[in-house]
Image 1 (cartoon, rainbow, N blue to C red):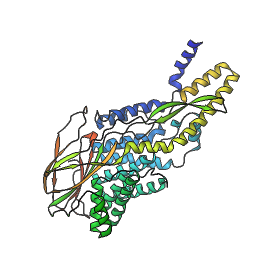
Image 2 (tube, helix red, strand yellow):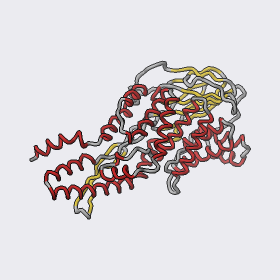
Image 3 (cartoon, rainbow, N blue to C red):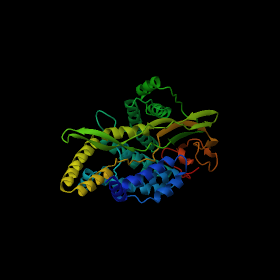
Image 4 (cartoon, rainbow, N blue to C red):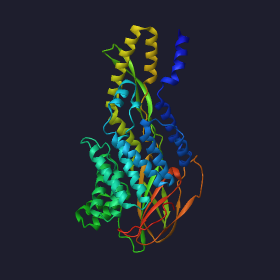
Length: 439
């Protein structure tokens, strides 16, 4: 009998095991390879995977991110805007998807992203549009990010509230000469960091000090001067302002785990397959720039590792309830089938075991942290080192050159895993100058 059961199980395994689970293992594996490989190679591998239609949004988020960090900003925006349309359409979940999730498992529901991911989508689009010298389009994205954060806002916890999104919004408004709106966004960024017991990085401190001074908000300026360690002085006429957006690491992917729960109505324990995040191995690695005789270091404004776990914790009660309800229902089906026919009972029981898998989908190629730096440089030519991870391919030059002129504002986008540096340059608050995105 045991050999028969084993034979049946082996035969049914490729048929009954949800395709999404196998597909997700491949995607998670690619994300884990990102720091040791190249985004170009990972993108090719991702494109070779036949993703289920219900995972289309996750695929587009990852492909859009990989295209962004390789410099294909137009291709990235096409993918990310397509993902946005799907996620927006999923606000009204179909009855058939709910039914599939309630009977089989959560992976039969279309992937609709976590709270933080829905905001990070707009953040990445805003960065991409900046790198394409399209300040107006970047402004649209930060406005949409603000709408999403307002929809996600909860009184008792900061779910879906991202300091980095507000900082990018402040930067976009500032570049467009909308200083009052920029000030509001910078304040929101500082407030969110305070709610999470995080100290604002010097880039945010300098932004708050600079704008309160420029807007004549003397009392608020004095408050920040007492609170912050950063100092702000008007830039020299021949100096440029540099803002660095640095993405470090790759966020940890979800995994599945089984836990046993006693169900009094059944008089027995049932096994629940639930997603979880394993402990992170991430070690913060700031970008350090030695320029004009000074050291400038990026500091974290957003801990994506923490946000991912925060989002899952917020969803955990609903996931647990749905999984428990589904398992009780499955147990009833198995019991009913077994009372009619032993073979049918065996078949249904095997299906029940194989079909119950945790939903481990996520936007798993995001960085572990989002970091910023903000400083001024005298006009001249400077070396910019490329970030490098131990074990990753040592391709291309070790550094590139940055040429700055007085009065410029230069935004650098530096994704650590790609060993590339991209830029947006503005010669005045109102008239951006076209420049190659890749230095």
